[in-house]
Image 1 (cartoon, rainbow over the protein chains, first blue to last red):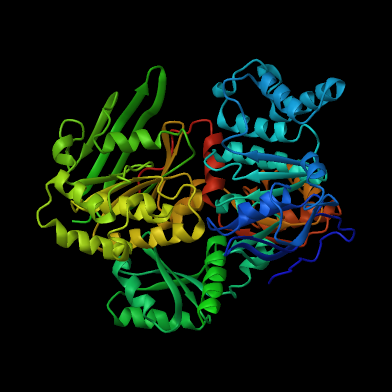
Image 2 (cartoon, rainbow over the protein chains, first blue to last red):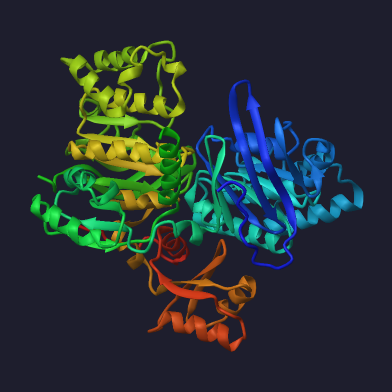
Length: 324
Length: 316
């Protein structure tokens, strides 16, 4: 599904980030292979894939840090190959680990980042006050960042990346490991920014984070395998094709389940089993087979696929297509 | 047999200087269970695991493995328990085979060569036996570390965040491997910050701020909080959220991508409550449907409760 663009929810959809047949090779290795997509203003765009799938290389090209071997890309209207200096002023970047100086205070971090983004004087004061307000750190300006709880740190890192009011911000696994309360506050802030027209580009391995994005792209082996909203991605599994089973001795029944011709994929989930089947009619056959094999009583219920199920499916299909 | 308690903690406290990492934890792990110790960073998961593994002495309270104090009997315990730390130690300049051999000799495992071959087949490293550990990929290093941890055939394995920062494909492979081990009778206690991994466990301990907030089977998670969750899709999402937050039966509204998760309490038809409220305000609703509450919903509810200690008893 290369070249995919979802239909916009808004009629006047302004494209802020675009990649067209973007390709990058390192010697014989094709790190990014003809990747095309468009991201609209205000969109929260999730960018997922295995390690080595080409995500980082794509982002480095979009940030103007690496020249494409072929293909084109733009960020806020600037060409990534020829106008990288302009692009660097149009983007913000935040990663969970490296954005803040923990032995500096809140104020000192803001001042440092403002300096690197060339935000001075009145402009700096206005943006600093904004940052303190959205992070809730007005009363803790002299606190060392090392002493702040994780949730505050996260929001401070984000606001530092936004001091120069870039139209696009790149986030690298922004809330991995933070508690749900802090994560929710962080995503509330992201949502406000998105409503305000900031485009948010998120790379993550965390499905909890991916679920928060408006659209999600999946990269694998340099190619873009899928790009859509989460409900539409999950629709690759027809209703009733993901089943949860309860049976006796699930840990041993999984092998029996895997060998059934109706079953595409089977896995142990705690003391239950998950199966992906070709058609909803398979449920009855599975139940009979497991009972016959001595794993009864068996109950079968359809469940919603997880985003992880979706990705594994796309990747398996891509790998099968490759090997055939 | 399957009710045999392998690990138990009562009133467990771990203090570092003036910081309480673990503040009175009670838990049990029974044979053949897959128990998830799930919660955010800094919640006390690692400290709890380390005490249970006999690697760290509790400040107060009791920690027992196989019915005996974990610290006092730690030498014997290490022959029956495996511990996969978050940063595992492999010898980069030894081969795959040599790394496992090292652990086998350290534990004094008899006839370890047979076991080594079995484990290499299990983790899928049989074709890489003579490769240096430094030259393995991240996922392969983790599999090697797992094999080293299992060379002495422990009855229970403690894993500290084995899937953190791991991509979805590798993560799924790792869980498949763990499922194979469970099939062979191994008991697991696994710490993770990923709430969606609760589904992989037979029982979940939700840990936050040094305490266990809940102890439940994954199927019981929706019951950890009152009311039900309605997923709402509306073009005017922000306005819909504002309107719903004002409704009496609505306990909570949060944004999830293009949708809202609305927790409705004390209403017979939660979907109707949402539709009526938005309809009355002229906000078009594209979709509203009940969805099962997830662990994140439960976590948010539990951490906001005035008395987080008063919670579910261990399910049996």
